[in-house]
Length: 118
Length: 112
Image (cartoon, rainbow over all chains, first blue to last red; front, top):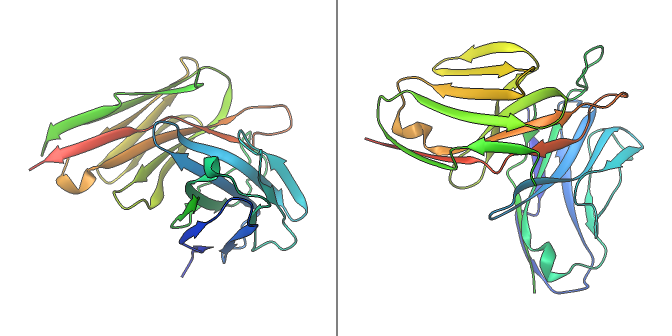
């Protein structure tokens, strides 16, 4: 079954304790991305990656790191989490479209990871 | 100011009604996505558009690139259509558009 898998789905942690949210897809997609969703602010892009070893900042990258060492995995790293990073996080992937103006195809989302930082 | 504006923010309608949700954006884009998020949080892609019109079942999406506007229509609405509908755009840049900017969503409730 084609899917994007995020772990953990729920996490409560404390300020400053490094954590990693994993994201894996089995569709051989080039494009992967991370978003956070907050009440009143909607979805905002944190980082994205067009392919292995290629990552770019989205609108809200501060306090986050990513890596893309393999095509299927795109972990989100919070080196020193703070309470303002309490949020619902989504990972998504898509094919990278060649030839057109847009290189991002139909998006496939993970189920979300609800993170609380105390 | 958000570069992607959706209207209405909230919409309550009766089963069977024709629904229209609008999305306007302020810069050049290469593609526009319509997403659906049900209570409980999962997000699914409904459409990706760069021009014209697409139809899938009771859902129709249109885009007017010159007017920087897209609409999502639901015909013969049903309570299971109750969800948040989100518009997202790929901002166009010379090297290709990879980042996505989102509207804040339209919360739709269809009453039986």
